[in-house]
Length: 435
Ligand code: SF4
Ligand code: SF4
Image (cartoon, rainbow, N blue to C red):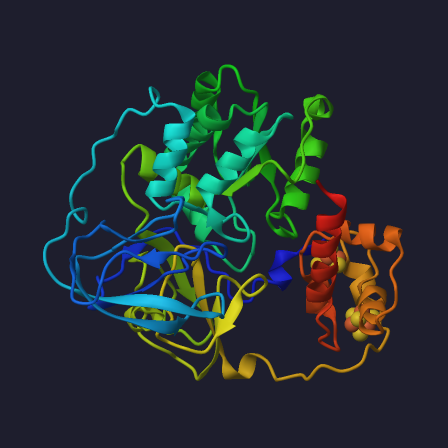
């Protein structure tokens, strides 16, 4: 475990946000999460309203709504925030807004059956951005099918310490997020709920109010020192809960439980309590090349160049655009890349910040072994894999311990893709050893 001060090269703490300008055109990716590919339900030249369903998968578990009123201009292929390219539709903004600037009334939801709530979450297009983004409705359906005890883990801070979006949302919308937890508990009837929060947050009042709402489900608030890394992966949260909650031996917790972050919880609140489709995101823009760092509430489909312009442009020559954090994110090379539902941050690195270092053979420095939080030997696994050597069953099972923290990659002077290799072996091992 290391101090995040060494990692957070571009992390900025935000205490407020601004609404980004409504763009003149939005480019809506038809792949708003890592798993679902939707089909368009509109045609070129069609007039659409703000909030209208414009694309959907066949099961309606993750619908996409137009974030602006306007006219569908064309279909094309565009660079996405995860570095891939995918289909998108462009809408030219025009006409009156159905949701923007109009206050929403809180709706009663406690008379709804769990299945209806799951359907509403899917129809409002809520995705779970805890780790790899996917429709939350799928997670909820899977939880309902599980026969054993299930728990909910809520992470109120960022997985990647170079991001600040989840922490900001947690501090700004605490009551809404906690109400979302009551909704999720109503849906999946968990044996326990664990809220893991930045220990600098003051949650006492909210925690007391929540304990009365959760009268039958044990609710645990667990403070976390987020200045240490890694802290926010499933493996880390399970370890933190096991260390903090004495009664946990009686309740089985596992990676199959429901894990959500602050941003997802806020989307649940908006979808169920405000009946608001998922059309906006909180996105931070920062980095050494930026004239100003800002946190925006922005419509999905907004090109990132619009946000960079609203920050006053660059103050130094930019060299890389990193989406979603310097540790877990991806580099993109296109300023037209649109904001998607899984976008949390944009970091612009300046040219001088790093030199290109090519991949070279392992020099046996041992850094990866020293830093590995799971006590693995990433160099050995990598070399074995490259030489196509046979792994023993024990060695394959060992990779299941990898917490996917990526620290081995960061400390490797040879820039070897250690995490990527272990993750690939782990994926196969999971298929083989987990039911
Ligand atoms: S192998 Fe790498 S990614 Fe996996 S736990 Fe060890 S340091 Fe982290
Ligand atoms: S950190 Fe990189 S160079 Fe050093 S032992 Fe591990 S794999 Fe080899």
